[in-house]
Length: 431
Image (tube, rainbow, N blue to C red; front, side, top):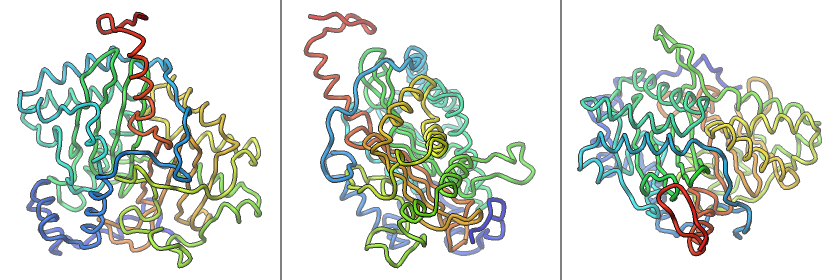
């Protein structure tokens, strides 16, 4: 049986242990440097070194069988407010010093798109870090304004919720300089433009968003969102803030609504750390996740049951889950992306790990040629629960077959440029 959402306080750590007394004295850079130099904890340091080896691989994209399927993605008008996003980004740049502008700007095709990660360790220090801008509050707000202009209102609220809960975690463990509401880095790729491709990355503990923009089209992928705990309590005005509960409830409802034969087929492992799992199927950081940081080229075979073989009511629950995972997208883009996912239900798979009673912790994945959704209850990292608990959640989204970071669109855009010339910054003329 998993611990409940509100039971996290019985798992608060002993803050007098060396881990926390050391963390409480350090800033994010000192904390990361000590980790890299001492290599503790060893399992995480080994994972970090493995990540860096994966980073050296050229990007191909996640697949189900090692082969990239072509022609899955196209250029389209998704109605995003590109004018407002560009205005917000340019306003942000005017508030930076020249040193900050040099730090924040990378080439559109820089491999540093791929060096995001979700632990609290600042493993890749690039761009501008928001918690180092206390003396430049206007700049910090301008960075958040870029995020606000880009995301849906619901998506922006979800991102703020993740950031605030991260700050709450920092208060619980008294490590404010490492975990706080603003312990996130912002990096710009390319030049803000209404007509040319560009984008940005916003990443830190439990929130990583990679956003590619081209005219009125947007790709938000890969992204990672998590929380430990996923609810704030106490006397704070923000008490009651909670994220990731809809994804959790809808996933459980879907599994419980399946008939027993389909439940048996969907449940690929009965235990969250099952002895039947092959080597590498579980690891300390990602636990059951397959598509986390630096896993840009992973082969993830289809598992479980086909969504097309579910009842209309069950398929509606799948779409409810998809809607939550596409919540960061503006309304029209979200609707178009949801339809793209729905149109491939005949090759969309749902799988489950763990029990599916009301109190059970669990993992599930929804996977097709155009989307991968993962949900996972985790054991404690800062809290002391040794078993996965419902108050520690990791979620992520990937766009397989080369779709992450807008990579699949880039050659299409370059091909268009051979047939069109740009007139100013907003219009096209055919040559």
